[in-house]
Length: 112
Image 1 (cartoon, rainbow, N blue to C red):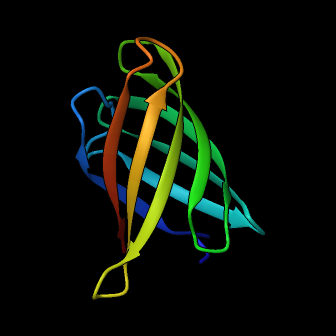
Image 2: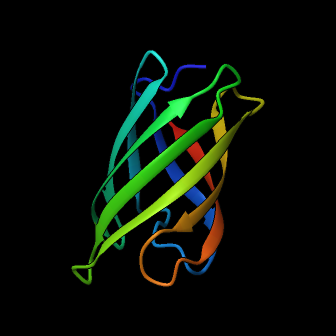
């Protein structure tokens, strides 16, 4: 699976997360290395870097500045699902490595 030039938006997130349907993720991939910039909603600017395995699963680290001016960091594992229309849905399990270090789950869907 290759995520190069794909865009995603959250469709679901736990309450302790900062992303929302207003956040847009721009993925780039070279080999198995995934990078992404994102912003929108509570996120002023964010970036992530990850490794994609042979099944399309992503092991990533992220950092972002929110609209309170806080620098937040975390880890995330994403598992892809192919929707009936061919788009990708990502099921994510994440944990903050800053702030309260709480855990959460989110779902992102590819947008055209």
